[in-house]
Amino acid sequence: MRMKKFINRSEDLVSELLEGLVLSHPETLQLVGHNLIARRNRKARGKVEVVTLGGSGHEPGLSGFVGEGMLDVSVAGGIFAAPGAPSCLEALRWADGGAGVLLVVLNHAGDVLSANITMEMARREGLNVKMVLTHEDISGGPNPEDRRGLVGFLPVYKVAGAAAEEGQSLEQCFAIADRMERNMRTLAVAVRTATHPSTGQMIFELGDDEMEIGMGQHGEAGTGRMKMKSADETAEIMLQMLLDDLKVKPGEELLVLLNGAGATTLMELFILFRRVHQVLEEKGIKLVRGKVGEFITTQEQAGFQLLIARLDPELIRLWDAPSNAPYFTVK
Image (tube, rainbow, N blue to C red; front, side):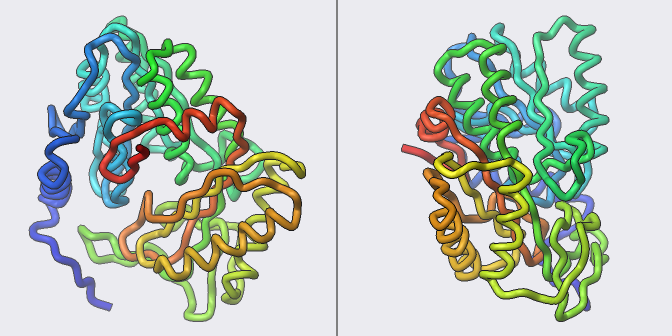
C-alpha cells in the first residue's frame, strides 16, 4: 500500500515538525540549540529542571509535554531514533540553573546509550544530574532491565515536574520520580501496522483477523499473536496481566491511562476504559485518576497502551498539581 502523508522532503521532517510545534504554542515553547524544545516561561533560576530525550515521529510525545509543572527541555532525535549525546549534553547545560537536573529516559537501547554517554560527559563537566529510567512494559519479562519504556513517561514527567515546580530538591524529585516509576505497569496491543514516514516501509505485518498483545512502541515483538478479540475481552486480558504483575490488592488506589497508538478512535478507547473501570470496581480496586487520549503514538499504527499505576497521597497531590504543557494541562 502506498504511503499517503502530508510531508515535504524526508530529510526535513524533524526540523519542520518541531518548528510547527513551537509556532502553534508560542506562549509555552521555544526552540533552542539543536532540536531542543524548551519551556518559554521559566521561573527564576534555582529550581530543579526536568529534561527528557527521545526519537521523533511519536507526537505529541515527548516534546508536547514541555511546560509549567512538567518538562523544561525535550531533546528530539530523528524519526524513531535517539538524539546524539552532544545534543543531550547541550540540553543539560542549558537547563542547569544551580539546583540540578533530572533526566528522564525511556528504556530503549538507543536512548539509553545516548543517555549513558551524556551522563558521563556531564559528570566530567561537574553538572549535577540524576537519571531516572522508565521501564514499565511488562511484556519484556520479569527482569525490569528488559522492560521497555512506554506511556509511563507521562506520570513520571507529571509528578517530578510538579515536585520541581514546588521547589523540592534534586534528591527529592528523583525519589518521587523513582517511586512513580516502580509503581506503574504498561501493556500494549496492536491490530494494524504503521509506515515509517521517511521511507514508506511498513514496520511489521499483522493478519486482518489478528492482534498482538505486548507489541513495542516501534513494532517490537510481543507476547504472542491471537485472533482479534472484542473490546471487553481485550481489556480484561490486559488488565489482569497488569494487576497480577503489580500485585494490586483490593482497596488500593490506581491511576489508569489509556493511550491510543495513532489510528485508534476515541470511540474505541472510551469503550475500553469503561470495561477497565467496571473490572476494577468488581475487584474492589479504586480507580481514582484516569486519562484517555493520544500521548505517544506511532504514526497510523492502530492499537493502544494500557497503564496502571499505584498511587499514594503525595503522588495524587502531585498528579493534581497545576501544569501547562501543550498536550497536558491541569488547572
